[in-house]
Image 1: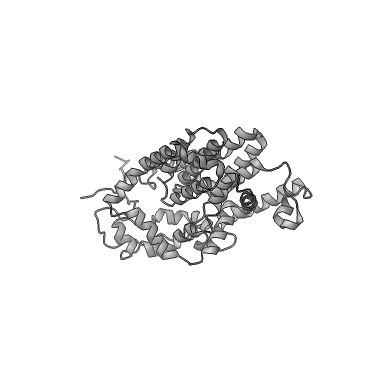
Image 2 (image 1 turned 90 degrees about the horizontal axis):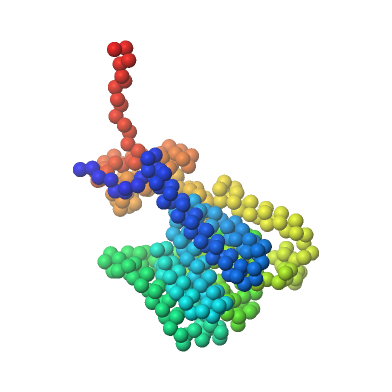
Length: 112
Length: 275
């Protein structure tokens, strides 16, 4: 009896598009989340666009982030949730609102 | 969802909160505990799955620890950080780390210092995990956010500060940074300095994988026994990596699944167009 182990075989042309969406788009979106998480605290606190932009450019210029945008590794969500975790803590410290701890908890749980 | 070692990232950051007076007051409020409960609830399916599957992923972390503890760790940590974060970002992050450590009484800086200092500390060494350059990048963003309008002073603190000081023209600074960045990307994509598979950057780009194909795809190899079916490294990927012919297919298939994902089609008789 013949059966296939995996429903998606990336090396068959008709599965390639579906595989590309799964493997490439998701890390890309997660990198956007991570970039936003890096820039958001800077923007809310000092409103200096140049520094926000510089932070985001440097963040995306690292090899790790550049590779993650087209490779499906667990580092992409790990990076995004680590940045969100830190963003939550920064918001707690800045605003003094305890509800930001929920963001810290969600990011921590998803990061695990 | 990602890696269990993220637990140590979270614990390092939370310990940074606890040692900071202004953040310690939150311990008396229910919010941190609600956040912790939420994190536990999200992580609960992972624990349940592990409990029903012989603690597979948790065991993997422990086995990695046993396998690599004490072996070439300083080189791996420093090399990984410099390479994956790029030298320029690494320098900024190192400056940020020193600055955050000096100002540890301030809440957000103590969190960052606690997070970053975990790398040379026991957590990281014990788990033998690669450093997460993203955290360096996050630190860099905070460094830029909180930095004074000009970079800190020059000579006494060494070449890093000298590079960033005002005496160094902005255009030259930009060129140096660009050159460093270009070199790291060239190394990652083209393996300029032939470090082979041991270099994490080149390994991410697939360098050396093709040479492993004959060994891993051999019929009696442990990886094939575990997977029981198709080659670990697909022959088509080997061809893409330009490293020689694809691996030999196993002679006898253990399962009824094709040994190669690409099945040769049976030759069809040519249509007789003269009829």
